[in-house]
Length: 356
Image (cartoon, rainbow, N blue to C red):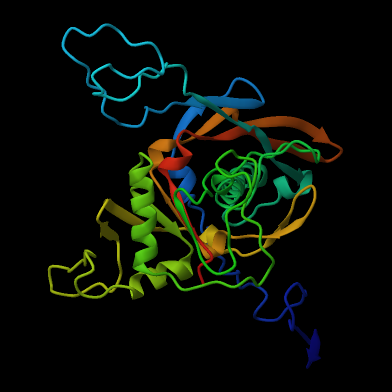
């Protein structure tokens, strides 16, 4: 504060005096803009189911391979392993269960809120109740964390404290329905939720090609599936659009005023249409440490090819607020949810790994 001719002049916010500026009100809008993306593309696309234990299990079944099973007129039933006397038809096979049991652990996600009494009492712009505001914010953050777990290279495990549910890549990583480029290769125990794609940071990659997508779609078709979506990071979303050339079977969106949108929304393959879905969380490159090793996260260098009908979020405990109450002069609470990923048909989905 400076003094001029016996008058006190305000020179800084918070100072007191008799200058002409002290009565001016601050112009602060009564709202807060959330500038972070909050959508969860994969989690929002899949179904829901119920878990009843910390290890959630389900079964898959298969039909026998097609063959010539004709027999002569009036033929008796055939014992298992025998061939019709006429030589017509294939050997009879004993039909027993061809079912496979798959499973995944539930994991517990939690976010804690702690707001002081002073903070709740203050008249704040854009916030009626700081505790309620933080509660809503933490709930959104927890959903984003779950999306992060689902699309990244996390394996199901219970050996290092907190249980971990296996994500998409721990079930869909077999050469049966996946394409591996650069230094990326299939794990030793794929399609069982027991292994993930592990490569060194900086491993060689290669550019996305339409033949990669066509190859995955063919593999999925031959294994009994029919994918409807391809989910990629923002960078790979742009690369996908750059692949657009004439006569590739790509639908172009032309507005009524004749403007051409230089982006690809749906790719028409020989084995069905694929909706192209960007996922900003897949673009968050990082490394993750499991119980034994530090491994490169492959989410930002892969494309997930899937049909939402084969996936479900199995909930053991739905998201709920736990009111801890007062802790000293603060109000404390937490969000808790326990859930698992259910992959009903791993071979009905696929992925492209090692994309630049």
